[in-house]
Structure formats: structure tokens, C-alpha cells
Amino acid sequence: MHLTIRVLVAVVALSCASTPVHAYLKPDASELMALPKFCWGRYKPELKQPTYNIPKKTCGPLTNHYCDALINYVRATRPGAKHPHRIIALSVREIEYTRKGISKFPACPIRKHVEQTYARARSAQALFNARVRSQP
Image (cartoon, rainbow, N blue to C red):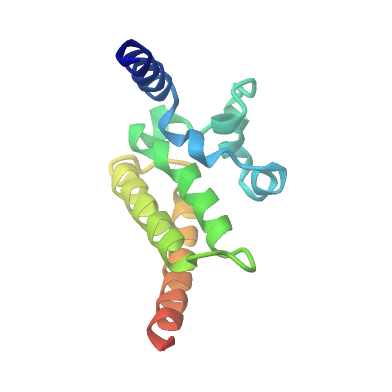
């Protein structure tokens, strides 16, 4: 009995260790289409062309959270989303992480997109937080 439990724990631990951190964010088809093309390669590994990926050389390594932030933004702003204020807060944090990361890379081609998305996400966050505060 104890051996079975140990084996089960080992299998779960190994499967978690080999799962990418962003695996829980597997976008469905509509979410993927809502993303800019430079995010498609993150979720579709067969898309290796530069068009489908954020260029690490010109944007830095801290852009790895940006596409996840966009998925969370899409999910938070979807009609009927559960706990949108929590989802948008996560999105804002991930965008802030990206903004900090690209600050040292002035030639980053996604900079304008990041700034525009940050403004929209902060606006949505304020709206969702106001709704939560106004609930009894």
C-alpha cells in the first residue's frame, strides 16, 4: 500500500516538473486568434518563424510573461467571466513585469503594443474593482 502511494506521488511530481509553467493557459482557438501573431509561437511550438514569436534579442528575456498576460486579459474581459477582477490583476502584474523587462531594450518592436495593452488592462482593472466594491 505504501509503495503504491509513493509511486503515485513520484509520478505526479515528475509530471508536474515536466509541465511548462504556462501549460494551464492553453488558449482555445478563439483565444489564440485574439492574440497578436507574435504570441502564436508560444502556444504552437511548430510556429518557429520570427513573425510568431517575440524577439528575445531586441526585447529581452522578460517578455516570457506577456502572451500569458494577454490570455488573462482576454479571459477577464470575456462576457460572463468568473472573478474578472482577479484575472485582470494577474494580467496587469504580468504586463508590468514585461514593461520592466523591455525598459532596457529601446528597439523592442512590441513596446507600443505592451504600453497600449497596459493602459487598457489598468482601465479594465479599475472598472472591475469598482464593481467588486459596489457589491453588497
